[in-house]
Image (cartoon, rainbow, N blue to C red; front, side):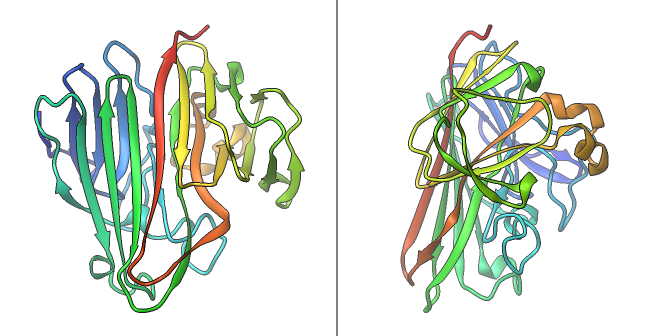
Length: 285
C-alpha cells in the first residue's frame, strides 16, 4: 500500500505497510511518527488522546523532531520549529515492499523567518519486519556555518511504566533536569520508574533494552546522535500538561536519540545524519 492521506485533527497522514504486515503512520504536520504496529503486536507508540495539533502546536506523543534547538536551550521556541511546521512528502512508500520507506522534507523557504540560516531537513522512515528506523538529515544550504541541537523525541507505549526497566545506561554521566541540570552518574544496573524523570545521558555507547510487561522487549539503537534523553512527566507534571490525561504518565516513556551536550557545528555545503532504530527482540515478562 502506498501513501495514504487522511485527516486527523487536520493533519495529513502518510501510511506505511510492509510485506510482513507491519504498519506505521506519520503526519506531515511536524513529520511526526504517530503509530508503529508490528504484525501481531500491540501499538508501540504513545500518542495522547487529548492532543490537538495545529499550526505552531505539536502533537503530544509520537516522535516530535526537535530542531534546531533542544528544549529551551537557546533563543527559539521550545524544541524549535520543525515539530510544528508542515513538511513535504518527497518519496511515498512503494506498495508491497519488504521494507516500506518514505521521505519528508522541510527547508528554509518553507518556514520563512523561522531561523536566520539556510537549511534543508530530510526525515526518512524505514519500516521492516518488527523494526522501524528514523533517519534525520540536516544540510547546510547557506554560505555560513551554523550550529544546532536536535532530538528524535520518541514516546514509546508501555502498559505501566512502573513495571518497566531500561538497560544500557549504567555508569554513564547525565544531566538531571529535575535538579537544576546537575551532572550525576547513573549507578543503577537498570533504570526503573516511579515518577518524574528528565535526564540527558551523555555519550551513550551501547544499545538500550526496554523491558515492559505486556509487550516484547524493545532494542533501541542510534547513530550520529551522541546523547539519549529519558523523560516521563510523572503524576504531578502530567496533571498540569493539559493535552494529556493525568493518568497517562504510566502509559509512556520517552527514549530520545539526541545531540545536546555538544552542539553540531555544520559548515556550508555539509550534511549531518542521525538515526534512531527500534526493534522488537523478545517476549516480555
